[in-house]
Image (cartoon, rainbow, N blue to C red):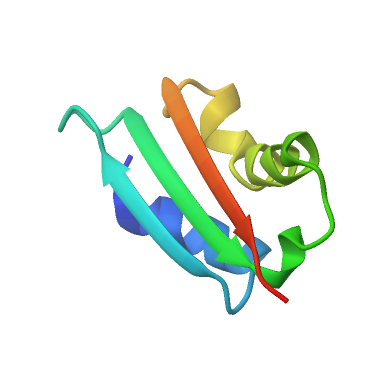
Length: 76
């Protein structure tokens, strides 16, 4: 899995959001994503993370992404 593919999936789900992706181990299966956008404003942290998990459901379900750390931030 490449960071470009993850970025594309997140960009499709959260247009206009600021997205940062770090391959934590260099092996292409452990990532930390940070997504900052208006889609998260007013939502609980759990709801925000569910949206990110939903956007990355395919690679999470098939094991392409083995471990995912999520940071989300809403903007007004």
